[in-house]
Picture 1 (tube, helix red, strand yellow):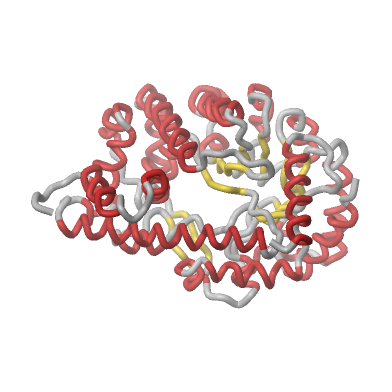
Picture 2 (cartoon, rainbow over the protein chains, first blue to last red):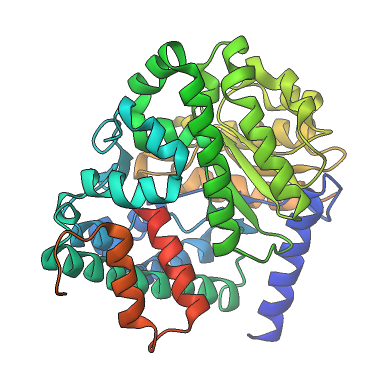
Length: 388
Length: 41
C-alpha cells in the first residue's frame, strides 16, 4: 500500500472507531450507504456487476474520485446470483429494474409443522429439510443434487475470492475502508425474512407463540455462532451489519416479548466478544426507543430510516452511535442549497459530543435515489463543516 | 456417488472430501459456513 494511502486509511478507520465509541473524532465521519447506485452512476450494467464483483471496483474508483467519503457501509452485493443459478432458484431476491429487490413468500418455504425440527436442530433442519424445499434440485439427493451443490460451492468460492480482492483493492488502493465486514440477523427476523414470511410470522405469534419463541431462540444462537466462526476476529473501525425488520411492526407489548429479548441477547454476545454491531433500524423505531436502555454497553451503532435524528440522539445517544440524517428524497429532488442547509442543520444538531456518523437515511439503490451533484456538494460540505 | 437419496448434510460431506486436499480445513469450513448463510437469502 502506498504510504499516503495507508495514512489516509488509518486516519479514516480511527475516525470511525472514535465515533463508534461515542467519542469525538477529528471530523464527523461520512459513511456512504449504497448498493447499485455507483454502478448506475458509472454506466455499468447491474447484471454484469452481480456476475463479476470486480466490476464494482471500477464503479468505486470513478464515483469516489468525485464524491468525498470516509468509508463504505458495505460492498452492496450480498445476494450472490451465480450461486442461486447453480441451484436453479433465485432465492428471496431478484434483480428488477437494475435494483436487487426482496420478495416475500417467494422462498419462505417453512411450514408451521416444521417448527419442531427447527427447534431440535437448526443446522440439520436448514440443510436437510429447508434447503431441499427451497432448492428442488437438492430434493433427490442423487448425482444431479451433488453436482448442483458442487457447482454452487465453486460459484460461491469464486465469488467470495472476488469479493475479498475487491475489499483489498478498495481499502489498499483507494484508501476507503469497507466498514461493514459481514451481515447477520436476529432469530425473529430470520423467521420473518427467509422462513415464514410476514403473514406466517404474524399468525405464529398469535397462534403458536411458544413455538415461535423457541425457534427464534434456537436461530438466534445458531446464526450468531455461525457468524462468529466466519468473522472470527473483531476489527477496530469495522462492524457487523444487522438489519432489523420485525420489531417495528409489533405493538409494544409484543415487541418486548417476541423481539427485544433476542436483540438484547445478540448484543450481549457480540459486545462481550468485542465486536462492533451496526443495527439498521428499517422502518420507524420511534415507539421503541425507550427500550434501548436495556442494551448492553459496547460499540453499538444505529442507522435510522425514519424519525427526528436529533431527538433520537438525545434519547439514545448514551447507548448507541447514531448514523444517518440526510434524506435521500431531498438528495433526489432538492436544490444544492436546500441539501446543504439540511446537512448543516443535521451536523449542528447531531455532531456535538461525538458519537455521530453522517449518512443518508436510506440506502442508495437506484439512480433516482440521489442526484449526483447534490450528493457531491453535501459530502464536500460535511467534510469541511464537520470538523470538530 | 454409489447411493442415491443423500441428504444435504451428506452431500456437504462429499464436498469436504473432494476439496480437502485443495483447501486448508479451516478455510474450507468457513467457505461452507458462509455458503450456508448465503443460501438463506
